[in-house]
Length: 292
Image 1 (cartoon, rainbow, N blue to C red):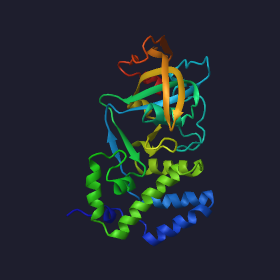
Image 2 (cartoon, rainbow, N blue to C red):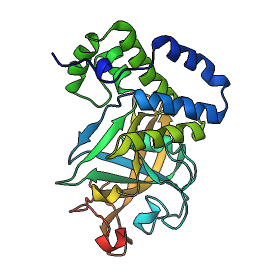
Image 3 (tube, one colour):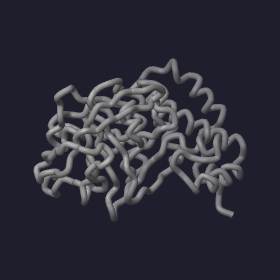
Image 4 (tube, rainbow, N blue to C red):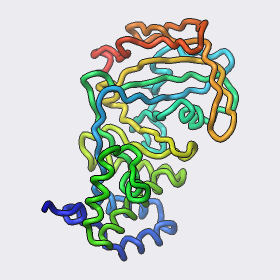
């Protein structure tokens, strides 16, 4: 019989862990970072490989006459250092993506304004590795992970074979780290956690986490340095977005991108039918020379 997950990856002793969590709110920022480093060092993060077809969205709120002119205006400014965010310290770029259109609009805090929705997809023949936050605790509590799919049942069985205190420590650590990431807006702490995960999980290019603003929704924080190696831009549409209630939106696109020039400029076209959105075939990616 193979060793249990807690034997292969011994968690922090339960009493020590609960004492750390109780003391955490009163710690300084540097003390919190050191505590996170200790937990990340022992915790076996789930790592999932995603292949072609996964599609995520990004929203940009616009003024009445605004219209993005280039792909860079939909993603990140290459000439401006990254600002501190939930999953990135200063000068470390990540692109934040949302699972659905409503999630992207809500994350951007749109109430009633024009907005641009860009969709990105993992391209044919490419794949990425993702670390989902809180996946183990979610499987134990509900029987189904946020993203693990059929693997959820196998993990649940493996967990049941662990000594109970070890299993509790593993799950509490998983839930606590998720709370450190999304349970507040202390970005110095959450971005340090993201950096620690990227450093430990070599080859992981994205962290998946539950949205604070949209119940049940999932966001991705994707490293920008290798983003275009796997992802492509598949559609962009612009229109009036109105928040209805409880994170649900009415979005009426009236303009869409039907092509991208070699230098990244967007070619817009008016939509006669809001349900017929042009798709970019193949998905747009910058030329290899532009990635250098």
